[in-house]
Image 1 (cartoon, rainbow, N blue to C red):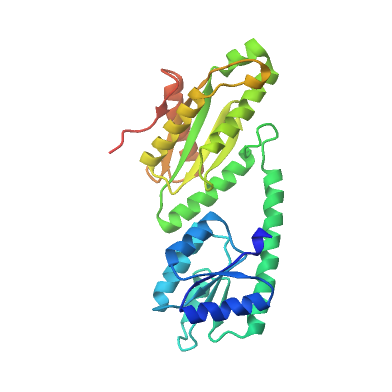
Image 2: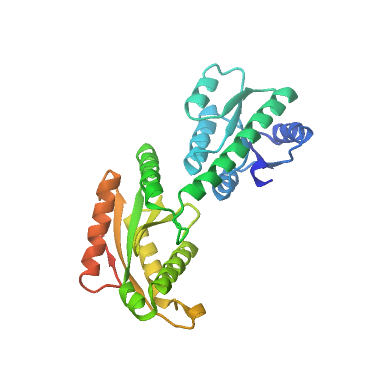
Length: 300
């Protein structure tokens, strides 16, 4: 199963191979990677059941890598393997979010115990994620719903504050969807909304999310994205909507445009309500004038 993937990162070649053999004997083949950058990229792409992080130099550098792994994927279970000669190492690793800390040399029984518990944890997280997906999806478009949106934005803001990173949201409103409802009926209007959500999702990263705010309004969250980056995403989505032909399967060819507003933490607000209000107001300025545009404060 994908959630049973194990990564062994850092340390010496001998240490990696020794641990890989112990993991294999417990029934779980592991990927052994020396380069921290490659390991971090793997975690960003898809979570592992466990990451074993081995000391390969100064323990402070390893703990910095632990921070980066958990910043990229906070739910990732990272087992730090450190020296017995450093009494403060265990406390420091646990304080910074390590799932477990093992002392070298690691006994096979310890490896088996950590694997069993870590993989059980991964299964539970996967099951919970499936339940959340079902509970937090909009019934029509399968975008996330507004109830989940507020919770998710709060989580992203907490991460942005902790690591002093930017975070942006887009407020998106379809232009003149009322004309589609009048010409083709509300059922076709609903199908347009389904197409819009799918179209937007194709142009987002895995870490981005789209939410149906209500009616023909959507909100897109963009972690690790400043105002300039958000403007690029908004214009990319605006072009995608404008170039798409809707309701082709219904025997019609409908062209639409969308208006966008941008808000970025911390410049445009420190909390969820402030950011949503700012993005909504920026979108409304476009909606009430030209339409088919992006509302944003002047860039520096």
